[in-house]
Amino acid sequence: MAHSKREPSLPRQRRSFTVAASPFNGVKFDLALIVVVGVVVWLIHDRLIDNGLGQTLFLAGYGVSAMIWLMVKTRRIEQAQRAKADSFHGQE
Image (cartoon, rainbow, N blue to C red; front, side, top):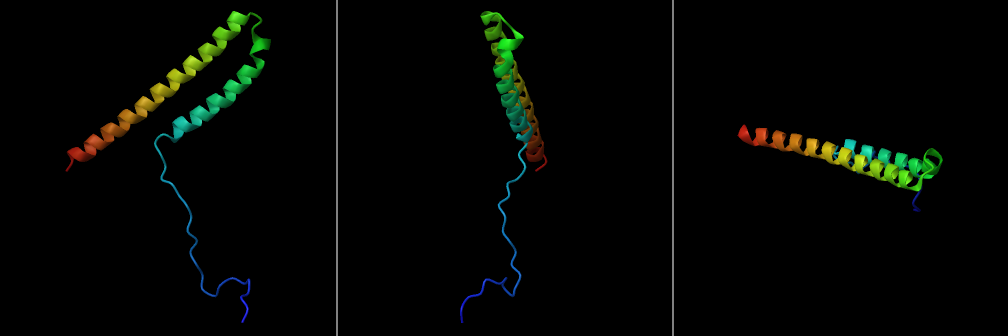
């Protein structure tokens, strides 16, 4: 008998690849948004500011403020996770 391309007679459960939700998903989203906005700002910065030094300071300011935002948000999440783990281990 030849193999047919029909569905098997017994249903199979499809195994799917899933990953547990990370507490850092918000940081990942913020990073993606910062990169997209950064590319747009980089493309139009010469229309916003005429002075070369002003353009450099504007882009550097955007980059530094984005870096600080991501560092603060990551540190807050890390501290919350550490406090959660400490309270969990303290209950034992």
